[in-house]
Amino acid sequence: MMGSMIDKFVENKGRHMSKRELDLLSYEIRDFLITNVSATDGHLASNLGVVELTIALHSVFDVGHDRIVWDVGHQTYVHKILTGRAGQFPTLRQYGGISGFPRTGEDPADVYNSGHGSTSISAAMGLAEARDIRDEDYHVVAVIGDGALMGGLAYEGLNNAGNRQTRIIVVLNDNEMSISENTGSVAQYLSTLRASQKYQSAKQVLKERMARIPRVGESMVQGAGRMKNLMRYAVVPGTLFEELGFKYYGPIDGHSIGDMIALFEEVKLLDGPILIHTVTKKGKGRLKLDPQNVSLSDGGVTTWSKVAGDTMMELAEKDPDIVCVSAGMTESAGLSDFAKSYFKHFYDVGIAEEHAVVFAAGLALGGLKPFVFIYSTFLQRAYDQIVSDICTQKLPVVFMIDRAGNVGGDGETHHGVFDLSYLGHIPGLVIMAPTDGDELRDMVFFALDLNRPVAIRYPRGEAPSPGPHGEKEAGPLELGVSERLTRGTDTRVELFAVGRMAGIALEAAALLEAQGVSAGVVNARFVAPVDEDSICSAAERGASIVTLEDNVLKGGFGENICGILAGKGLGAPILCIGWPDEYIGHGSVDELLTHYGLDAKGVADRIVEFLKETAKV
Picture 1: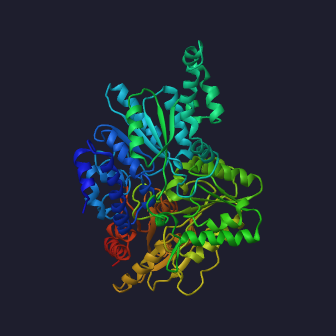
Picture 2: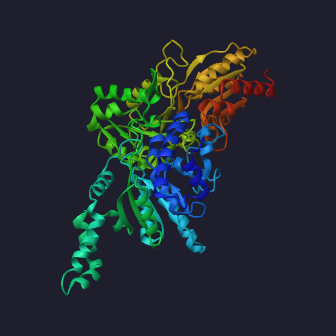
């Protein structure tokens, strides 16, 4: 049940609430978040940290009229509560429920779909410029975290907005954390600003002291603008934001509702670009870390990420040239132990995927053996670098593509269902997909020996052990060679499955067996180069071909097989099973598989219909 302060705020949009009521509201929201997010899973710590900041923004700005663009978007739970969606929180991230990110179709207050970092400033600038061209009147606020501020796109937005003097307000939510603890010069710079609370007060003190100087004081104050740079550098070396054309205010306590309201009220009257630096504490009100970000095992269950991290530890013990690069996700990618044990061989570059890839190119050119750990959905941002900087130079860089395929509750911006399509056509790039944890380990070792560009994609969650191989060991890896898991007793249909879909293929084959269809199942292993011999052999002996992949159908594994068969003049019937040509929403992994007919029963039913259509049943 919603608390009275939440009800009152939603009803009146926060108007005429006293400071005490707003403080009570912050406690009520934290209790609400801990109770509800713990029940549905989600990004708890980041939202606990922005409670007061969000209350202040909603108190000052008319959210139904003004535009607030939230960077990354996982910090918008409080925003959703204050716009009347608290009653829907039991459905948060659940199939058919509200999203864990802003969604323009969900509520008018959600003005921008955000799931990837560093986009808010550019989007806010676009909204502000559109406002001015159309002669409209509303405020535009971008809320960006210090982790997202490490991404290059954020600085492209700052540079452009500062140059054009666009009237926007950028609120920097500085909590010293992204998915992992922030590192690098930007983090150090913000730390310097946090430690320099004298920055803004020094301006006023200097003015007051100059004004008291007999005869020349007033003229000195009038000329203070000419001294601005000197004072700035004397107090805080290199005030980056002011150099980029922004008026800088801060650091300010991001948990003081009164201070933020006063400052927001002041700056909304000003022209030009403004940056407000707020300092918050991620997870305020709860000591435990957000399990969404750091859980690698639960009750003895081993995740794909942990297998990957443990394998890197094993490799590093034997090879001093091994290095790992992470794009701001040390813990969740399974690299915490590696980072501690081999800290000279580990680089967390922050939310900067393009840099991570080009940096790895330099490492490889220098004689090292880099492994780049990036989630599938975020690697999309570095497509050009993969093509131009890695593959054209044939550099031995291994991409460890975590969270590939259906990731469940994070929804459309986080499903890794495009990587086989955007990587599969790159010449010379080897692409592998393991069926279980043991095969992932084998593929990592195999990739190292290949000495060429390699991508290994694996899903989120538990790594089966044993996997589709059962108790027997998987056969040795050979470049471009698949592995037969079962051999059907008839030749009507062969299932070629990629990665974790091999397990579903085996379950579907068992269901088909009960209906009198004895299908063979093949673990594709390699998406590039694909095992053309096995596929063409099946087609030549009259089998219908079924492909299964945890990827969109367009440009994916199945379409590639269709092209191969057509190119060789083999007219075998083929059924491609994968994600349809649409953005996949949020829900549990199993719910989404079932809804789209990608679970074992759905696959078996589709194969039976396919065989009926091709007169093979």
